[in-house]
Image (cartoon, rainbow, N blue to C red):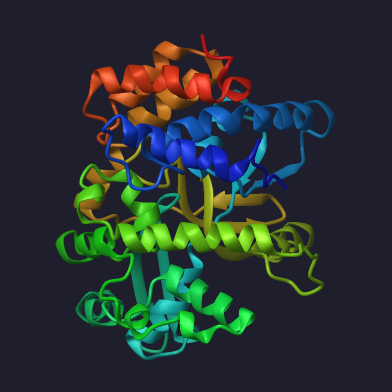
Length: 367
């Protein structure tokens, strides 16, 4: 299991976020996409490649499950460097559908069959049906989702409420937090209402991949989420729970027992899984798990407009992976300049030098 970061997680993350913004580059969050996502990748992928090199040397048949971000860039680079490794990316965002779909459709999750896919942190619901009737529920989702999502609180407000309850300061939570319309779902709303598809996550994630994300994202909610996520991460007492909470446990059991089942979301190379993206890219799709391991489930449908947004990421992922493998500043610059978020050549050039100066121990390999 790989779930790592390098250095001071939050100090480096804030450099990923704020340094591009200081040069006028409009990015939403700076974790998985945009300029910040690139430098996050340049920093965290090399040690993961080192881990994979050891796995290939000592236990080449092992299954590796990655939870680290930027997920799709990590996985794409690893599969390019070690094409024979059993390397699977897992992310928790798919869990949102188990919460929201029953509420939108007023039916238990046991009565719904759904699939979703795209890229990690940039996926949408592709199909949903009622199990009892077989009826397509997607038109109903699109009709009812706006009223539902307009009224639910953002994640930052929920974390704020949790902290207030734990600290005995319930007065920190105001009614304004609870009624914030389309909370952390400005870019989400555009995809829902203009592209006619339901994203599986919120603005802090999907906004990173969109050249217009900065214009419509709920920046206050994103900042609130980051603030309380940081506070939650740094305050807690880590403990190992005795109860199951990770899907990976079920995946490992199914491999060992040949208990075949469909897993809702895995990140694997695009081997005839999504027609709108090339084979080298790692995509997020459902997976089939049995004694042979984890394989992707082909998605027959993907909204045409959203496919175009996915296609914008192809060259970025290609150049990011190759820049890491070659240690090439020239390819880093190209990766920035093909990103729709980047609209200034001089700013991109300055950004590379500034980030290397800020993080020489992590980025000094670039030449």
